[in-house]
Length: 446
Ligand code: IFM
Image (tube, rainbow, N blue to C red; front, side, top):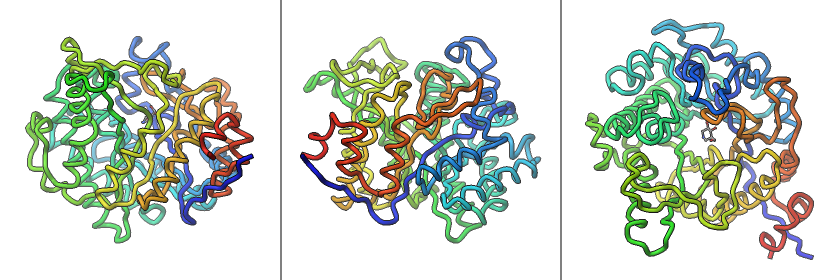
């Protein structure tokens, strides 16, 4: 019988991640709330509604985090609550966030605060959202100034923007799954993406001006892009194209201060301000994306998504479970010589039959990466609790905790106990694997 322990570094961050609109409830002053009101936008016409009721009682879930032995949590603050009207700040909302941040700290959980996670106040949306540099960038910088001035004593680990590539591509280019629901408009999508990156750079400056010790990064969603037919030149080309637009162009902009060709379609102003605006990099990793060339799919950038035959799939249509894709992406990020946080990783898996092995397999890759001196400093599982999954509504269950949005009743899934055991031990052991996912034992502990 194999017996082994894979230890993680002493100060490793074991956390979970959430976003304001997905958990707080009644965020009725942003563009997502409005989008939800039109039938057809969200699967089953679901609405975020009360969500997980965090606005009233996030603390009960913070207590559960303590039971899991977590020492970190990534949450976002909602711009439309803090600045409900342009230039008008709501001190009561700020106070509520202060209470949450204190609540995390008192429980020994370090907060990472995301400043923009997909939602815009309605007043910004009416002014074009992120489409105009001279509107969105200074307004975001002013909002960030207010946040750091009022919450900077409680947080110094900042994530400026969540997944600008997803926001820009799903909102303007691919299938209109996100507001404003524009389809096939690469030029507008690229303008939005560039503006969000400029917003990141402006936020980076503001945070450092107000807080000497600020640690500022971004949550970058990367997919492991793969041609469906190995060696097929057109599939290969499309996969490379998708890798460039989705993964690499953003890294080039943020580290080199340069817009790659595609981003220049958005006619952005100079990228010089972006250079060197990362103290760490956040990787949101979920899946491999296999593509086949299809000239009739401009919306998916001439690559149709297809699932690899025989792939292990989560509850998402294209949600292949593919831990092998994590290492090459980590190696790519490690070139920038910055600390790396896994700011999101998880899967929708209502019956929790895949999550335990998903967790162990991904964490095993992280352990190997750390052994090879890749600077991975923490892991934030998406998500702590089932929450409102944007256009998929309540159908996709990402939580370590199961939650019924009608009754608000929570119940830990089996994988919550596994994650608890890992976080408490700061290690993966063969005993845990034996207990939670025995079929993996030989593969993980050969
Ligand atoms: O729920 C989302 C999150 O808001 C952003 N990253 C991907 C998650 C799962 O789809």
